[in-house]
Amino acid sequence: MQEIGFKVEQGRTKEYRIDIPVLFGRGGRIEKAFQTDAYNEEEGVVVEVEAGRGVLNYQFLKDLFEACMMSDVRYAALAVRNSYKKSSDFETVSTFFETLYVSSRLRLPLDEVLVIGY
Image 1 (spheres, helix red, strand yellow):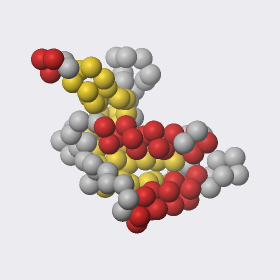
Image 2 (spheres, rainbow, N blue to C red):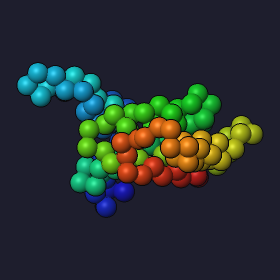
Image 3 (tube, rainbow, N blue to C red):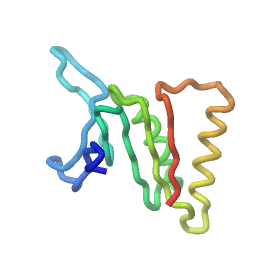
């Protein structure tokens, strides 16, 4: 991913995290930022990779919310396991997002959301 322009999180300590601003204070100071696993600033793409808790704790919804709040982000990609502990995580997340878009009841500030099963 780095070869095609993404910054990729290298660890969990502050120096390795990728923080995307979501709230600015006086003088343009960053008041709040959310973290992401990978980010292509030029294209406005964030990537989140979830292991076991992608569906279990509705982490995919938190990921979607955070992507919507991130400054200058237009695209979000969310990778979840195909299955986890007898749960079809990929199908669950895909169906949820499909329902969200088909219903047209909630408009997201993203051009596209991609769900990747692995």
